Image 1: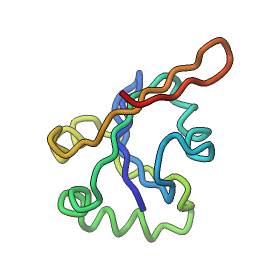
Image 2: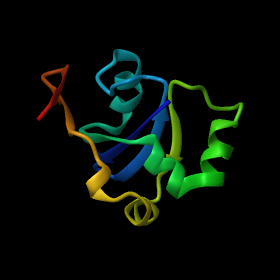
Image 3: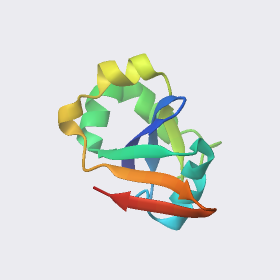
Image 4: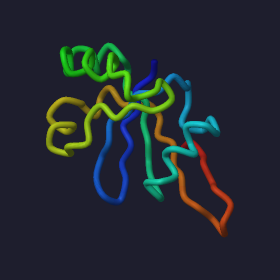
Length: 105
């Protein structure tokens, strides 16, 4: 399981996925709903340290699939729990002329 911090026009969202990259089509299709975004991988060790019981609850929720699980969508909570120093290389996504454009820095 991987974790990604996704900065969207409406605020940050911390998501979990079985996919290794937000550029994988299955995950990108889910994230497209947010419109333009910047994402960073967050090491699972950092996520486990901050979210402990809540992480277990989300991972054991039978209503959510492993393709895409929302762990946190409260911007204040995310900024308290996730330090910038743990964020991986950013990936940028923006629709361009109807065709998606996704790239890393």
